Amino acid sequence: MSPKELFQKLKEKRLISPTSEVELTQLWRLAFDAGRFHYGKPLVELGTLNAISALVLADAIKQATSHVPEILPPGIIRTVDSYTDHAKHPSLHSYQQNVELVRTFGHDDVIDVIESDSIEYLKSLEDKSAGLVFEDSWHAEEHVRPTLEIALTKLAPNGLVVCHDYCYAQYGVMYAVQDILLAAPNFGGSGLCERLWWGVMR
Ligand SMILES: C[S@@+](CC[C@H](N)C(=O)[O-])C[C@H]1O[C@@H](n2cnc3c(N)ncnc32)[C@H](O)[C@@H]1O
Image 1 (tube, rainbow, N blue to C red):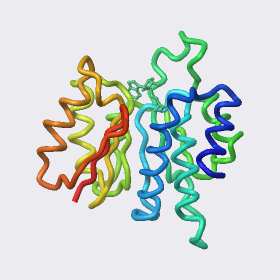
Image 2 (cartoon, protein in one colour):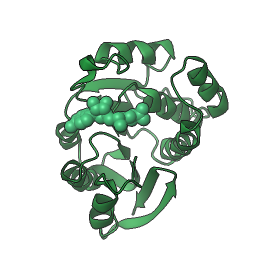
Image 3 (cartoon, rainbow, N blue to C red):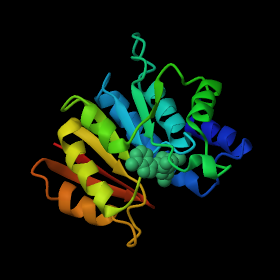
């Protein structure tokens, strides 16, 4: 499936709005790069919500590796959410609904839907093991700061770190990115697409 076809399917099911498509296309490209250059290394999303971006990561990594005869390791994409308060809002998926959605899209072979606190999950990863970490959980500075500090130790060399909602001054993402990632000795460079910021580590 091309990213266009995937987004069309998501729009038909009323899972995304056209405005999200630009950012999701950029996320798709970043995951494609990570899938290619960090073959076999996990891509970790913190903040699953309704598993839309997890589907994008899965589609990208499958296309990035379609020329490789080996089957991708199961659970190469880990999408993590605490699901706190999801039951109070009918539009937010439960863990079980996300498992079902991922299966419906045929990506349960590569996506592991995980119920956990994002920082606790990140800590449990092996050091320098992840190809990409996508922080999209709680945007408060006191949460993003430790997340990025831990992510730095968990990313493989040249790994990608991606943060959503970078541009909002009322959130802490921008400040945490500037203080922690841009100041890291192994920081390699960054880019911005609407609300999506990404950086590459050396
Ligand atoms: C902005 S949404 C994620 C959007 C999703 N990545 C997407 O693109 O469709 C934030 C999610 O983070 C989750 N969350 C908030 N704090 C968390 C924490 N400490 N650990 C894990 N998940 C958390 C919320 O339950 C919510 O589902």
